[in-house]
View 1 (spheres, one colour):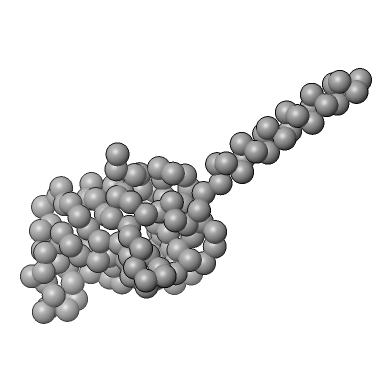
View 2 (tube, rainbow, N blue to C red; view 1 turned 120 degrees about the vertical axis):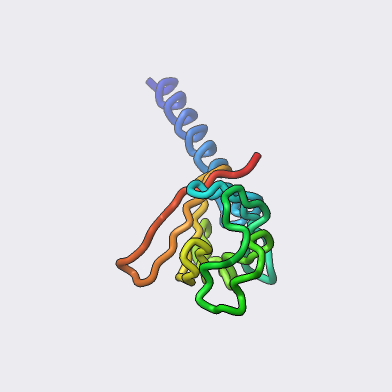
Length: 140
């Protein structure tokens, strides 16, 4: 019986260690990610003590920021456009900042949550009850 107890205890310790090894951190967000709706690639980088995101590749037809409500910005190229700024770590696996949506020219409260080494959820909200979450995958 004692041997069986030790076997279960050892199995539990291995499972616990595996769970700890798989824990994601906010820093796992750094890298290049694919937007699931338009196929663009966005690079998440460290900026100061926070996170910034800029478009590094566009695969759809939108080449200029033509949806921007500020007419003086409508001719700027989409590639190089910063879409997340001022993001600060708010949890061990989460960033929160301003999120710009090139599809409608709106700026929203944005939250980036690391789900795994290869998946993040990006959520934009106009108010607490009006949010949209999209899962992005890492570009290999």
